[in-house]
Image (cartoon, rainbow, N blue to C red):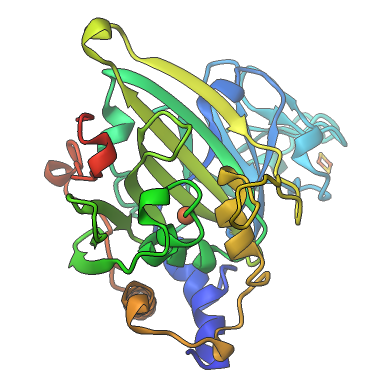
Length: 377
Ligand code: FES
Ligand SMILES: [Fe+2]
């Protein structure tokens, strides 16, 4: 159970809040490379409570700028992307990807005004078909090279779902393995309502989680990557098993986007084939709308089970009313590490899993496994 003040500190994501300042020390996925095309339509993005516009200029360079024009506030979402930047639709100011104002059509020809306008601009990087953004102070840490972002011997599917709740509810789900035997019982019938033995080992990146279920011979290993990501495997009934990474991205205090990557390694017959990428893009999740099924359990379709569990906790779950048991050790550890990282940030230090050494960032591999997909490697 948390006090009201602790709950506020751990959940708020806005600029200037303790949690928001900590979360700004990380790279976050905000879009898909394939969907942001040169001189294509600009895309409105919301991250950590800030409204932004994402675009790719005619030279292929990405830009991520504050959404509202520095002149008189019109949304750049309605602007036009040109060879060298994005032009506001209201009075035609043109900004490059670094936020420099490079044209002001209505100002006198000898005006130096544009040179004195710096529009807020943020760093972006592309990897594996995702576009990542960094809103924090310099120097930015490295964007981690997780194994599945680099792996090319199979099919990589990428997309993003919307969760109508605070990011911490989604993050806590990363270390809450207990829910597999209940919420996902329809998908994992051999584990249904069995008492699991769960271990959480703290690691530099977050935690390695092991789960032993009576009658299932091998343990399931998965990883929580600080602050809110998972690297795991799934083998739900009716679905092809996959290796997966999920980035739970704080959109604002009450909205989260889950960017996901599923990787399907090629079998013997496909060995040597080039990587195949499928960009599913943004899924159309609506608040309170869940696909229902008849399964003798909760009656919720596999893909919506986690949304139901975490969204129905409330937009920002009130943790002053909860009752945590022994099986919630991971949730307790996660909150302590979030708090530790907030404290470090407030003291001007790097929070947990701030990656700065390129030698540690060649290929960050994880041993996520599960008996059902032991054949995957
Ligand atoms: S409001 Fe954008 S150019 Fe005037
Ligand atoms: Fe789940």
